[in-house]
Amino acid sequence: MKAMQDKVIAIITNMVLSLAIIVVAGTMSSDVTGSNEGEQNKLATENMETADVDVSLVEKDDMSFVGLPMDTEIADTQTEGVVGDSETEAGNEDQTVEDLLYADKPAAPNKEFAWESEYADKFMVNVTDYVNVRATADAESEVVGKIFAGQGGKLIWQGDTWSLVRSGNVEGYIKNEYAWFGEDVEAHVDEVAQLYAVVTADRLRVRAKATTSSTTLGMVVYGDQLQIVEYGEDWTKIIFEQATAYVSTDYIYAKRQIGTGMTLAEEQEAKEAEEARQAALKAEEEEKRRQEEAALEAAIKNSGLAEIVQVGEYSLSPEDAYLMACCVSAEVGSSSYECQLAVANVILNRLKSGKYGPDVSDVIYAKNQFSVAKNGSLDRYIKNGPRATSVQAVKDALAGNNNMVGYYNFIYLPAANFSRYDEYIILGSEVFYRVY
Image 1 (tube, one colour):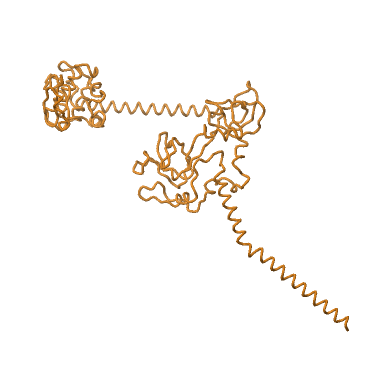
Image 2 (cartoon, rainbow, N blue to C red):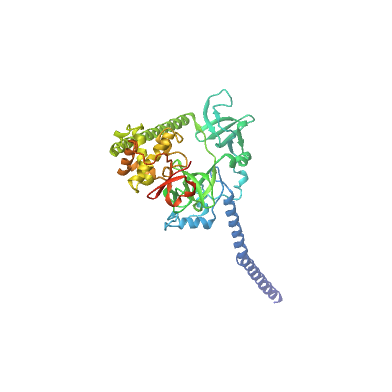
C-alpha cells in the first residue's frame, strides 16, 4: 500500500514540475515580445534614422549631390500648387527622398553602399582638352573616340600604363597619365565636373530674372536637369534654351555630373549639327537684317526726306536724314516747330564742326550727348517713323534755314544752370546755349 502511495505522489510531483516549466517558459516568451517591445521599436527607429543619413551621403549615377533638400522641403515641393507667383505646379504627394534619389534602383542602399566606395570603378580624364581612346593599349593603334575635359565613366581594367575604360558609347584604352581613378576622381570631381540642377517639383517656372515678378520663359518638369551657371541661396542661374535664366533654388537640388565621351561618328554628327545650327542662325540674322533694311527704306520714302538730302551745303544719305528727323522727334517732338528746327540745326552745327564725328550717326550716338539714343526713345521713332513737323524742320535746316548759328548745346529748362552760359535762347521747354 505504501508503495502505491509513493508511486502516486511521484506522478503528482512530476505533473506539478511540468506545469511549472510551462508557466516559466510562457513568462520568458512574454518578456521577449512584451516588456522589450519598446527597446525593439527604438532599435528599428535608430536603424531607419541611420538609413536616412546614408541616403544623404551616397551618390546616384556618378553624381555627387551638392545641396539635397530635406524631407520636409521635398514634401512641400510635391504638394505646392500654382497660386499667384508660386514657382511650382501641383506635385507628387506620396514621393519620398528615396523615390527622388533612387527611382531607377531596385532597392534603397544599405550601410555597405558607402561614400568611400562610390568611385571605386570610375575614372575621369585629367586634361584641358581631350584624350584619344584607342582600340588597343598602343599609342599607334586606331583612335575609336574622344573623352573631353570633365568627362569620364567606368573603369573596366587598370594596367600600369594603359587602362580599358567605357564612357558613353566609346570603349577602349587610355593612358593612365591622362586620367584620375577611384579615390582621385572623388578628390577632383568638384573641380572639373559640370554642376546641374535637378528639378524636384512637378512643374517649375523658368524666369528671365531672379524675381517672381519677372517674365516666365517656360516650364521644366520633375527630374529635368539644367546646367547651372551660378548656384544661389534663393535663385539659381541656369542655361535654358541656349540662354541664361533663373529657377527658384527651393525646388531643385544641385549635383555634379561627369560627362561621357563620344565615338568618332558621334563627334562628326555633333560637328555637323553645330554647323547646321550656326548656318541657320546666320540665315535668320541675315533675313532679319534684310527686313530691317526694307522697313527703313520704306520709312524713309514715306517720310518725304529722300528727295531733299542733297540740298544746300550738306550732303547726307537718306538714312542719316531719316535718323536726324527721328532724333528731333525723340528730343522735342511735342514742342513748337521753331524748337524742332533749333535741334535740327544743333545737330548740323555739330556735324559741321567735325568734333563729334564725320556723319550724323556719329553725332547722335556720341557718348553722353543725346540721351534719347540710350533710353529707347530714338529707337521707337526709328521703328515707327518721325513726326511730320520734325521732317519739315530737317528739310528746312538742310536747306540752310539756321536759327541757331554757333549753338552746339541745349538742355531741358528745369535743369538749366544759367550762370554757366555765355549766351542762351529759350524755346518752349528747352534752353539753347553757348559757352565761349
